[in-house]
Length: 476
Image (cartoon, helix red, strand yellow):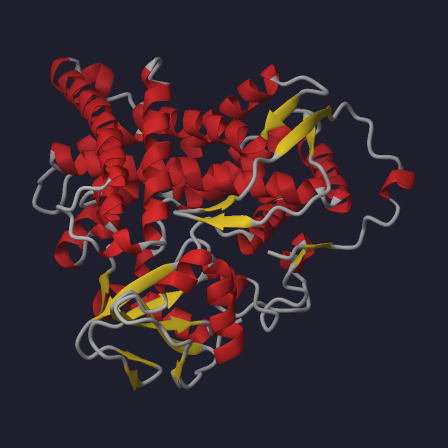
């Protein structure tokens, strides 16, 4: 459904503090604050995160225009010192000709045709994890999903599991991601890069670990390309593709550019999907009817065999479960751009320097676009569903030219990992609501400890299912 043209009429939001703007209120509870901007003020609200003026958008028509124009009319917003240390000058932080060059070099490595070649690795890593699970065992869902997606992305990106280096790299990335999220919610976001803080020292140590290992892998692969080109030519991992890529002038990515793109793909491909899978298990545990329909589809489509890439399009309900989880809990919950001179939205001028924001969290949960917006309803994505979703009312991977390059990889990975694990186990979680915590990604604010139940062909008895067909309602 295409959104109609909607006038943009910015209104004043909540009063801020001198120099801080609305940062204190935002930092206490970002999701609640953004929801209040939408509900109490409207679709275009003026506010400020620190000293810079901002505009928060909630209408899909305005969001679609913002995302379509971001490359031409809006500068990249650097969301803090810590984030820049991790991703460097990768494609997501580049603009203009530099962005076009890097995107042309990176995009072929994650096109749908290439994602097909990674599907078997996704299924194998999930099956290996499930092989170590036992009926009745209790697991930390987020940790288990992270271990699976980490192994997948390391094998797809670097061609192996990295052995003893895996844990050190994972720990370093966890520290960096935590500090990036913390920086977004406090005054350190506005401190010059040279100001030392304990958090920044932790980031420096973490990035040093990441750089040492990734540069070691790059040098090893470069040596292989030079000394054993016949062996190297058979490699199909992302690192090999980045090293082999050439732009229109025949120039390769520099080792530093390869490092930046590899680390960005690693961070996005690992943590984003593991977060989505964690929320999926939380939602399925609280909705037995949706889980039963998932079991039925897996039995019908797979008939007991492991899933393969050709099954992806046939696993329609599985895809809808993933999509609905991404609607309710979009891992990337906030997007922004800085308006350049001459920027407009819906024909209304946007002053240069204004930070223009939108949030998948608030738009995905807007009852105007999603009836029963707080409820887990995968059936809302049925092809013949009566309520059409407007364009850009759903945008978990961004939109426009800057749509996440790894979107296809993440979607296929989530579907195939879910199918592989759900064939073998149910994950039963205590019947309690868990609020999301808004850091770099939208993570559960408390550990999700599940009990594994073997899916051995026995299904939940009808008496147990009675009364569970009602959609799960979430309070956010």
